[in-house]
Image (cartoon, helix red, strand yellow):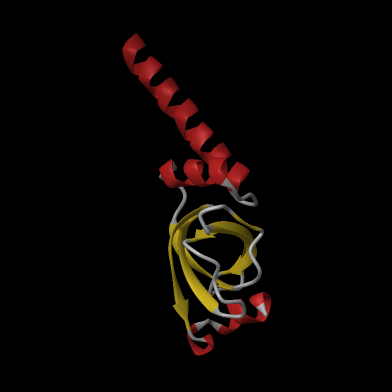
Length: 123
């Protein structure tokens, strides 16, 4: 009986920690929030859209780091950080597959493929 109470207590603390981490990373970006969101089963996968801008920085290997406002199809916005293998052309539209702050992939799409609510935010 004591073991069962102990296991229920651990599960409750774990669930509270996952909920807390989900809300902690909700409005943030970067490596740590991305890693937390990638591992957190309570954070759902989704797609957001950006209009490419000038990168924040470009390292010695030509990899560009971007920090931009992104929006989903419902018009919810968030700041997102992602890396391009090289400097991306400015003014192009990207569909980014993400899990919270964790960016999985991105692909260029036409302006017509960007949902209207997202387009209104990223323009």
